[in-house]
Length: 197
Image (cartoon, rainbow, N blue to C red; front, side, top):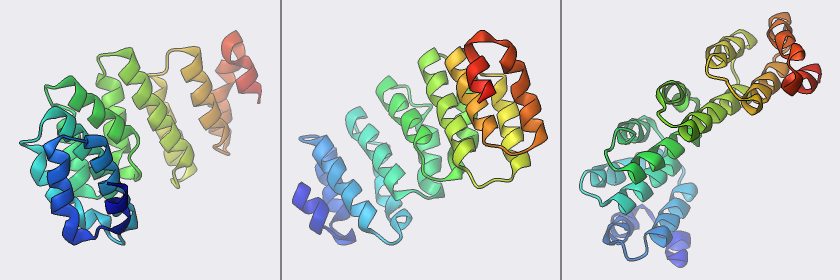
């Protein structure tokens, strides 16, 4: 599988997907497909064969296919991952949520925020919120858009760790409004040091 990941071309992708679906060594097959995807100049063009197999795949293979789609990227792949969040199988749903949270482009940010708002478990909410805050920090958006995104996320922030993350992101936005948003956290013992920084 390692050698296939190094040597395979787009022509071998259907065979690699067959091996993944057979389920004998899902992790190794997934790694080989991901290695192929990383080497491609336009990996999003290879998403269709993986998307086509999602419907009939067993849960372990479906979760692996979702992670492969993250490597391929593109709008179709993202839409398929978003649909998988509604999968009745908890392993598939968890894989879809994690793939969304790790998505490489800005396109997934709105979906991640929506998931954070509707999350039924604290673990999922925290994962989505951390991902969304990291996206704000690293995005190329204007200060105004970053500030608006922070305001939208602030209603979800509950724990002191989450508050510190939000304050850290606000600290990277160089405008008076960001300072004003940070000031209340100076009054809270758990976040005072972070806010002062």
